[in-house]
Picture 1 (cartoon, rainbow, N blue to C red):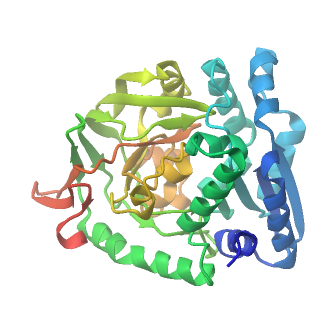
Picture 2 (cartoon, one colour; picture 1 turned 90 degrees about the horizontal axis):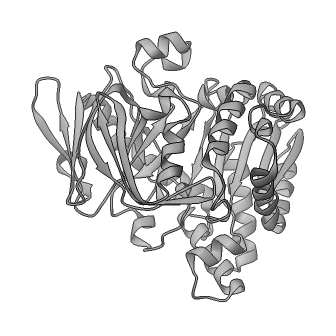
Length: 413
């Protein structure tokens, strides 16, 4: 199958399977300008699926960098009315929210991190309906990759630009299971493969997980009573099954916000707002990040923790085997969407309401009462290594192997 035909299938997959678009439903699409040819395929597929409206919000790394470098500080403290109206309005109308990720991993190097912090606070405050739509299961949403020249050259620096872009597209298509004759069927099978382990984890109802690795990771995280593990897809409150991330290899839940103790070391670099954080560690006490260090990007890491109080607590624990196809590809994508599916990871910031029984019906006070972390940010970082061990601790103190040597162990194999 030609690359062009695979890309067309991929565009169709994102609309019909990732977003599960319904006739008459609106699409709000954010995409890099460098991915314009593929974006047009996606728009074409949205109309073919019966979209009621398609709005494209173009992103330009160079323009964004200039904005962060030169705009007054006040520009990052309030979202323009038109942007808030566009995003909130689309969410309130039930739009499918699709984002194509292809940013330059080095595009924001040297930008003052406090500007990212201010913008994160502002956008979550002023676009509350937009983020609540995704967080509370009201809107379908999907994030997927689109190859762009600068991203491709970062991943494959030894290749000429055109070859690097083509190779990155092939990697994207492979990890998204879109390089075969039936991508939709491949995703149905992929989703079903998650369910046995999800059911086992939910039945076990571990009180805590303990992580150890030669990197120095020695960490225990507590889990909530009646917590829910999920993976392989998601469901809206109205019962529509969709895929928030394409690709996905993770099974995840939300931990107790005040029960994390120990130190975790990164396994892969973290690309955050166009800057890289490398070889970093975070120390937790009673659920809160109390210290951190990094070989590169320390101020950027500190800026994540400074977004709000919730940013110093965890909102997600995710299990990804080292045998994941993305890990086995040997490709470092410099993109959290891909790299988080190559390794077990944690996330600083907002927890998932759906990861506690009845959570989608709770208000913020109810979520707090059930120890779900609240924040204006959610940043995944990878800690999984080939020697990682994870042990599940039951309420009676009994221990059950969950991961050994980086992969599923015991009953979870």
